[in-house]
Amino acid sequence: MMLSEGFFRLSAMVGFVIVILVILFGYLFFEPYITGEIITIKVLNKSQFGNEPGKYFVFTEDEVFYNSNNYYQNKENAADLNDKLYPGSSYKVKVVGVYLSWLPRFRNITEILEINGIPVVNNPVKLN
Image 1 (tube, helix red, strand yellow):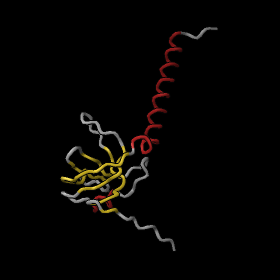
Image 2: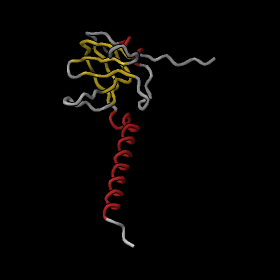
Image 3: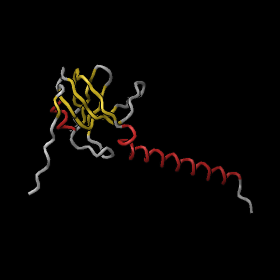
């Protein structure tokens, strides 16, 4: 018994779509490990993304960064980081993502390591 040519094409198309979805979600899951980088930036300006809480843009000399809470990057401190960012100051930050100037895809600031050359000390969580 031979499979019809139409059924074979449909099976190939479904298989191709499944492979693409696995690659896409695999990239989202492993993005912090693949694209994580520590860089130095000088903040020129910052702004909130509309009226949405926890979503901010950070404008620097070289590129625009996105400071937002992200489930895949295990980040829930966007508002805290936004309070530490001031225009005119230099920061050493950890960023995740790929910056493509022709596509509105910005790297996300996940952690501030230094402010004007002074290391940032993150207070440990106290358990009662």
